[in-house]
Image 1 (cartoon, rainbow, N blue to C red):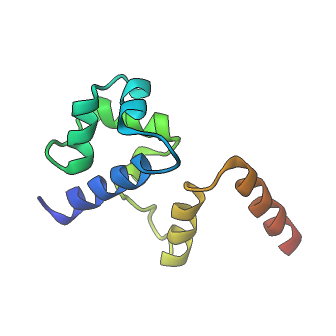
Image 2 (cartoon, rainbow, N blue to C red; image 1 turned 90 degrees about the vertical axis):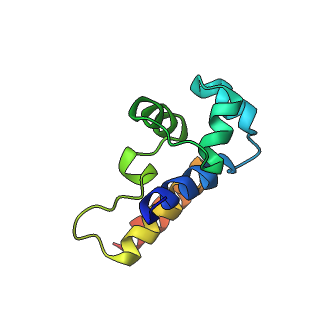
Length: 104
């Protein structure tokens, strides 16, 4: 397994552990079996394109984010900020937006 695949799995694992959602819950809501989802998290299997789309849609992230791809010319600080935004609740996102608006 190369570094990119490891990062993809780490990202899926990170997202899968977010909140109180179980593997069973995520699998059910993405149309996967629990075993399949468990295999993606553990790295025993690699998700195909259609599955990656389902997972990205479920978690509300882009495929680029899920696959750890960065936008061209994005600084490391900006990438870290984007990564953290995906883990925030809607309430927290609203608070961050309010802070940013005050900075203008």
